[in-house]
Image 1 (cartoon, rainbow, N blue to C red):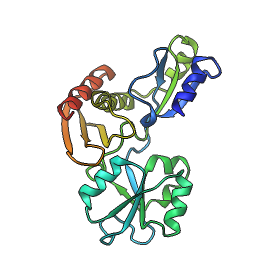
Image 2: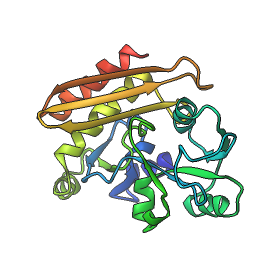
Image 3: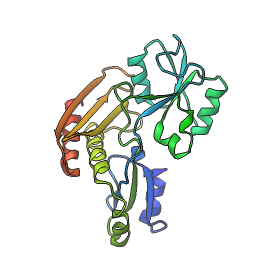
Image 4: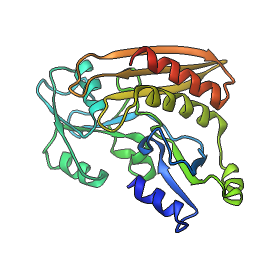
Length: 238
């Protein structure tokens, strides 16, 4: 879908496109740029478990639905006794399946629920030490043509430098690892006072050989500096 939207930008059928940045590949087409990254929504994952409410309260063997290899790895680290099963469909479809009892719980991005006005369905916010978010989770990226100065000037008014630096660090990890939707990969950057903290993990597609890294650098960090931090950290766990 991202590729189809980018084709519309390149041939002039659209002037800009709004993406969830976590769906945008590390490398953009040559004539396109991310014109701005607005302020980020909450990047954390949430659990929807109508009967048991929390991850720790789920009984042994409970069925937890997710389509994400990243979440599967995180769940197996925290609760290896759970039965993690594939779950497809949009948010409404996934919520209907857990309501119908096809799963005891599902894991979703909190940002997606917030944007749909469904944040009340979450029964637990999963902190980042339990489920490290996807690269760019909770952030939007507005893409446009590199030579469209007028559109870029308009989009620049929406740009949030804090969010952009954090996303640049996370995307640096993605690029260093050559990650895609089939890679169990998480990365999360945050400002802690005068420090930018970046954490990441990656595993093999079957969840084996889990590698983690945690690094800090001074804040304020430019997007270029943050990106370099991500590239460096990513190479340590490649």
